[in-house]
Image 1 (spheres, rainbow, N blue to C red):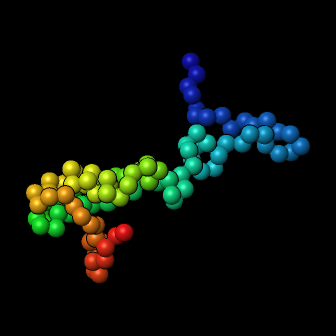
Image 2: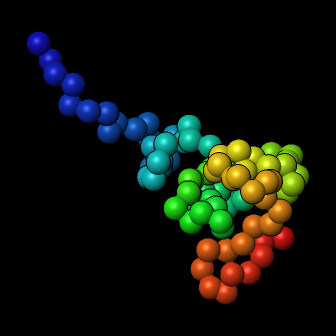
Image 3: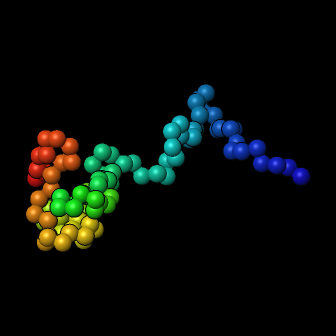
Length: 98
């Protein structure tokens, strides 16, 4: 009975160089994610009731207007005062995100 000792380290050599060497970091099947393709994660805090908050993940590749994004945020966090009209940073200075 033979046990598997992990992946083989045998490579085909051609002119003293490896043919199809394994990747050093990660696997080649993972799609390349640039800074613009990564999902955006952020926390939504209700300005009226600060104890009401939730996290949201947004795909930057979607064709969604800013108004639609604000409406989706309003659905995630229960906002009683009506739909959100603007988005601000949580840290000082509380500048508006446009």
